[in-house]
Image (cartoon, rainbow, N blue to C red; front, top):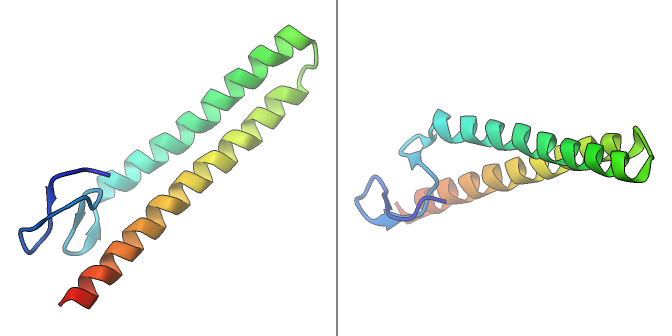
Length: 93
């Protein structure tokens, strides 16, 4: 989250770039990039392990699935935090 971001009322809140209408498109673009990077990171870890252990292509495929799961989990957490913050702001009004 972004510390020190100003909420619509002017108070400081770590809302991840959320404005009065919810999170900005840029925050979701960042989530998409994070999703892709998670897949690529685990893909290359799996590929490296396959080359070291001679198990090609099994660890590469497992790495892709683990990376996708990690990316989905991160995206889910970001969506839930955004939803929770919007509900809290509505309840404060």
